[in-house]
Image 1 (cartoon, rainbow, N blue to C red):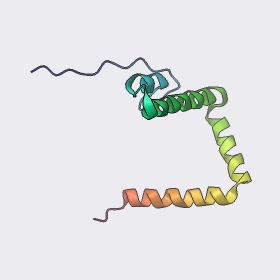
Image 2 (tube, rainbow, N blue to C red; image 1 turned 90 degrees about the vertical axis):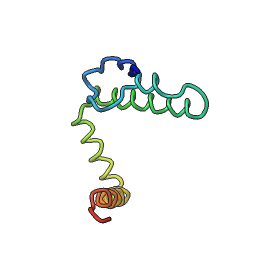
Image 3 (tube, rainbow, N blue to C red; image 1 turned 180 degrees about the horizontal axis):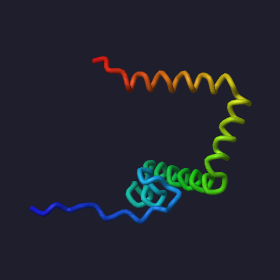
Length: 96
């Protein structure tokens, strides 16, 4: 029996890493109605805004914004770092 493969996704723009979905791909393959359709559209809009931000500011602008945010909010940034470290440690531990 022949195996049917999904359609080839549209070509990616140069600003998107190859492993990241594009907003168009999310919209195309995601649900179109109901709560999940709303969530799909919200994710696609977030990807568009993030991509536009990176095109406008670049990674150095992102680095500057993160640095400024940490300076304004040191305690939440510290707690976020501790939480991220905990999650990474749990994911990479070899315990059974």
